[in-house]
Length: 80
Image 1 (cartoon, rainbow, N blue to C red):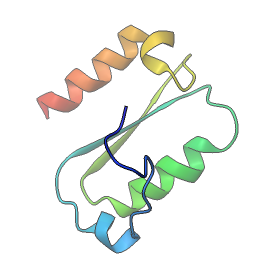
Image 2 (image 1 turned 120 degrees about the vertical axis):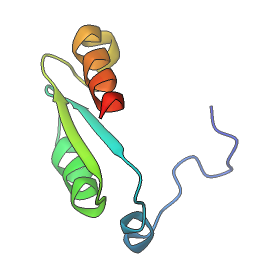
Image 3 (image 1 turned 90 degrees about the vertical axis):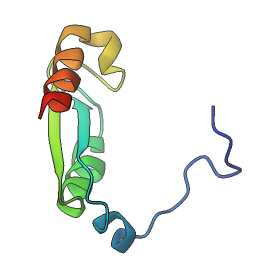
Image 4 (image 1 turned 90 degrees about the horizontal axis):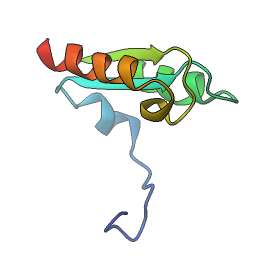
């Protein structure tokens, strides 16, 4: 649940490029449509300190579809 009046505000690419914190981009390997390429690949190019991970055998709800792989990806990222 969001507290914003706009649940998905538009953020300008120049603002995204300025983020210099580590960012984990996770996608399910079985996502339908072009979500992985439309969203994550564009974000990966914009974020200077990002890591893109595809969770195999998982759709959008990767934590439900592949909890072990999802948890491992988060833990490995936090250890960096």
